[in-house]
Image (cartoon, rainbow, N blue to C red; front, side):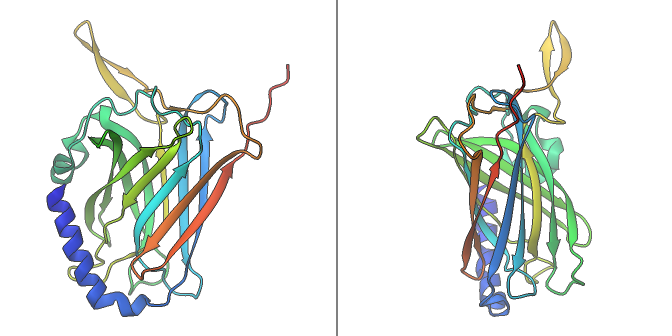
Length: 260
């Protein structure tokens, strides 16, 4: 990961020098959406989150360089069985998903990006995988693997560190986003939209029972037994290559109460 970080730092420095004037003064606007599935108090759930970035002045938004997602108090990820295996960043970068155990997978998603010389329609990176990485300072580390093929060719691994909150967990997932070159030595792409999940939905783990390989579904993070007035608040801070930053917030509404 240190080798990848050095590459990212050098790439970022070069691109800032060469291409920052093109995005100077841009003002980004971000919308954030989150969800629970199933949407049930006290249940093991899959957390879905997505965000859309636009340039309020028109044109492409500046490339995203950092993200901090703030989780509601009471979200419990201690009892989860997600991430029973650790995925090493070097193995993931070298071999893709084949380099890591299925038991390290945490979720998946996709992204929509645009190249600076594109047509304005956006290009999808159809595969974004979230996996359990080596812990850092006792904190959970989520590895994000983006696999773009056409027209943006990029296999990128970056990490987010989950810093626990002080109020019955919750906390922040902080990630530095590497720049994705549009072409070799070219300007970075702009991220328009990202959708991802963290949780057991569509994940299959394996264990050995009496010498046989048995499939099972892991337990996700737990939703609190009580919903705060107004719902479960999520918020996020975003930083961009042009030096600007912005924040966005959303709420997962309280689930409907069951009739007795």
